[in-house]
Length: 379
Ligand code: SIN
Ligand code: CO
Image 1 (cartoon, rainbow, N blue to C red):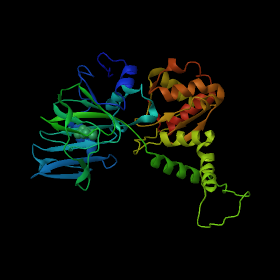
Image 2: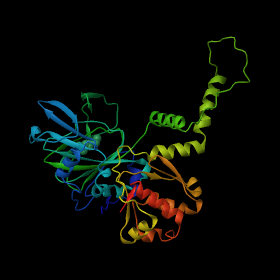
Image 3: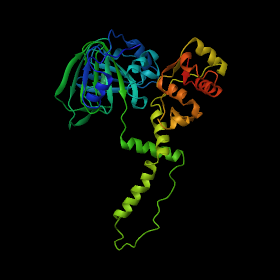
Image 4: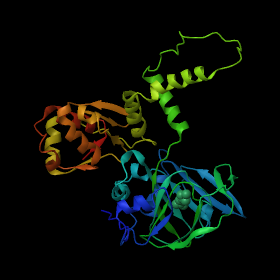
């Protein structure tokens, strides 16, 4: 279990003073920190073609990058390279546990846990990210520089590496094991290994209107929504046929706003969109499949865990009708089960005592059993 220590700040104070506003180092944010996975285990993950990994190295002042899977690192030598593995929380429950202390930020904002190994001098170079990240220093030390937000030029140092021009540091510090550096979107930064080192980045997604509009359009096509045509039975004559006049522009905007302003559509869309996993899930279907009685017996012995990377959310209003979202799908149970649904979405692990009110409820126990049989929850 990881306990987050924000120094003299409460999570509320952190959100008010720093979140999305300015970078900050929490010295010993994780006290007595030990790497939840070793560099060798990270290399093992990077050898799996299902896992997204990258190598970045510098040779003769040139930046290079390659995408995994990787079998060997011998050709890279002792210095100036770094291995980055995305979505480690999907594959390694011990590492996924590092996300739990950050759940004061809701599920829908979470992206993934990225883990990197850097040799001495290893770095991905100076860059800007478009997400919030808590970079937790594991074993070894890294030198971090963070600059202020500003109008900095970005350029491709390699076709797979977007770097930023030199920046003045507002943070220039060495992170030791257990230290945490929080960086909001838009702040240029660079971390360089001072010795072989591990770093664990809990990242939070940010979405542009373009991303969401594109997701909304896909959703509407998929659900066959929004087919009503724009209408103009009240048209006046036009003496300047080239013009799209203000009244028509308002009509076009209004037609689109009937979609965006439709709470039912937006709830359904946002529920599906923000619970869709970004990477392949590590799904294992139990064999033999569980029957409802098996679930009751098993949960009496051990907690039921949610699959790493599986996203579950509900909305304050529609959960009272039993509606919720798991991995891009809408589910609907009886309204009387809304407290059980909230539990499923809010907790990463469920114990018998958590669900004692519903162990006799066939609908709920059948649902959990179905989720176990889909590989979404496991013992
Ligand atoms: C790293 O861990 O090597 C890079 C993390 C980052 O700068 O976002
Ligand atoms: Co970064």
